[in-house]
Length: 495
Image (cartoon, rainbow, N blue to C red):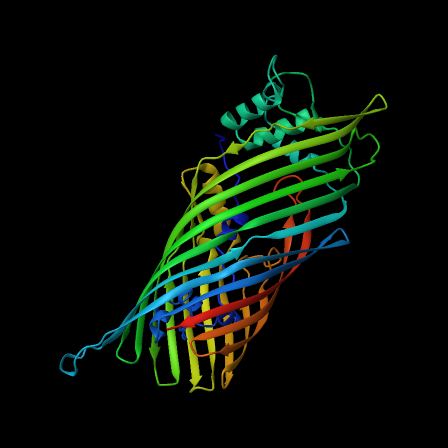
């Protein structure tokens, strides 16, 4: 069991942000369904939406998800594309009409029970960064090592790389493990041979560094919903969702660095880090929809925070090439140790949303949704852990509340429906250069066969960010322009 933690703002945001996913109709209107309901995915943003259904309804959706990254690092640009096919939504709503006699007619017209699955994030991604930088990866290892006694980094008689790496993880934490890798890889040496010495000097001389950085992720954040809703008179709809969340996330990074700087002993470094995350969480939502007139509707929703319990595992690998007496020597530091960290808890922020829609009889509709989420309320716990306390303080100052805007429209021609939408989400960062605003549009087409319907949609979103290679030492950033393309197919049935 490893001690310490390496969680930061990036981890908190990863599990706090939601993508616009769901059925093709929902997707085609950019998710502007808070006041509309009547769609399985609309339940995910306003639980009162299931009470709009008139019949038992089920649907399943499949999505083709395409993420394109353009990474610019010291003037050099690299493109990467990742494409995946996934289940985008699956669910069913059961409608129970309240049939009573005229003498005892109740104002409660019906109630509904719904079951739905929606992925809130697709983590599949590939990113390649290449360029000639001015800071070496040696700075990462040096900053980790300074202050750690030399005798903790040296192998004792009969001790293996795996033994000492494991011991440091259990007693000193990840910082000491990183320092150990750098020392055993000859990236730095002690200033003197004092076993208690804590100061080190790099074996990589200043200058320019050819760097290639690969970043691979896969996984998802899924939300399983049990929904209860009811209709009161002809004009009011109320609902509640109980949500179970599942996190499955894997990340792998590899940096290759080479240099020909005079006086450099180490000329090449390859550094690999792997992270595996699983988690489970719970949240709830309450919502209402009101018909102000037969054509005009409004909706309001409150999402509670999501409370997660998260587990993490990591592995590392390092190899270096150095020159000694005009000979090239390869050093491989492969602990073959799986670091298993103590579980931690994460609270993501709640959300409030308001919506409005105007329905033009059977001819079409327009809809608008507004949402607000305060990302500065992300909290790691236990809060008495010094590392978590420091991150929570940083989150409070670096992140802010962010608004989202979604608008959609639909026009019906007999059985055919034409759809479109736009969406815009503000950056969660105070410094918006870190992660910029997200904006995009969507289009869609549907055909109603009576008891069956088939829908297709396409959306495109764009966002820019600056991504540091590492949080310590090698903190150079690459500018990433990301384009997200999504095609959704939905088959629905009503009986």
